[in-house]
Length: 503
Image (cartoon, rainbow, N blue to C red; front, top):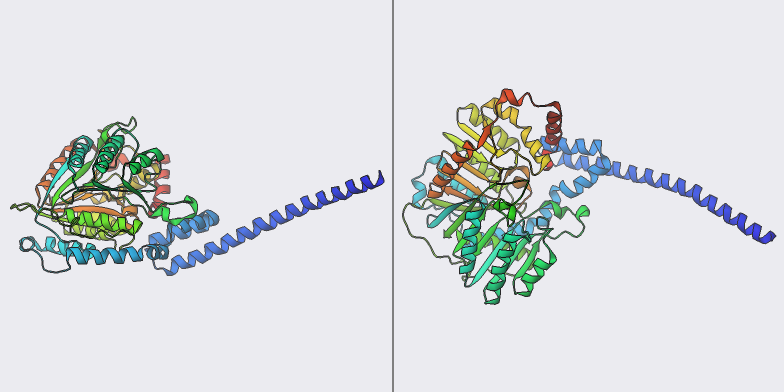
């Protein structure tokens, strides 16, 4: 009996010591972790300071690290490391540049049609070729596809014509009605011997069902995710996404633009309702540039080299007055922010008008200053945006730029007919950009994007006409009225604005 009491007392002492030391160890451990993260935050802050980033980005990161050392530490690991971006994509950038120089050529000699352009247009063409290594071609025909019905109607028609290969690269793919319709065509084509390669973004299409992918693979379609992320919160690859939307059929026809694969892009979503978007059908020489972009992205994920004539010899369109077409890819693998620099050059080259449509408008200081300077100099600057949000933080951040733009004379319109998702810039009604890049920092600095740049094409005129119709379905923002918005909205906008360099 006495021994039992001794054992119980001894066990009680052990339990008591355990709980006391547990509290001490927990307190010590929490304190040690806090100190470690604080030291890490200070060290990261010094790194950011000495990287000589843009002052806005530097101040934003320092504020985040100072206010939220632990959260800020993880934010920086995921979103802030410039050196990691360079290391991750240095090899891809070098290989892509080598491929474009080999296939597209690197001559500085421009076609005679370029010499007929104005000086500012010639400079823009040279800049685009130097940064993107993709030449301007005057043997390409394009057609603007307005909204989902026209876009998917043309896509389905061309996919059914395929006899040799189909290459698809998309940010979002959904397992819904239009997704299944495209899936069935791809499966039928693969079974008939057509080579089908399908590259989808691992994060943008993270809801895509395993059944959808397995059915395609079983039919012979090669499906690959772009930059898959196994541990989303511990892997900074999540921040660099493939936002491109490319389809190439038999190397002769192609599509590029703003629509992903999903029923909402056909206006079948209850919240969004009518979906306003713009895509581009391409036939002729510029198909080779889109093919190259796809093939290099495919090689990056599979190590399968496909730079052969069977994929890179499009049928040329030989007609007069087609205008010029130039395809440019941009991403974290580029030494320069290609599309952002070309956008900036387009804005400062404008003589009469700058018309922009973008669902997400978070310009960096360069673009913002260029737009305000253009408006102040008397140029007609219009910005068209959606009136309802799909990403609330981005929506509020966008509206935080309204007062200074309106004060400078920029005309801002909010589309009220449905959700506006077009990504368009039109300069002087003769130069235009259409593609996947939004007018925001994520598209400029982080995403893999692709845009078509059009010089005096019939498609440019279509974009002008469509833009004017969209303005008729929009409400203009008036500065005096906008200043009367609720204090809560101003607070949301200012808070979101602080995060804009990270969005």
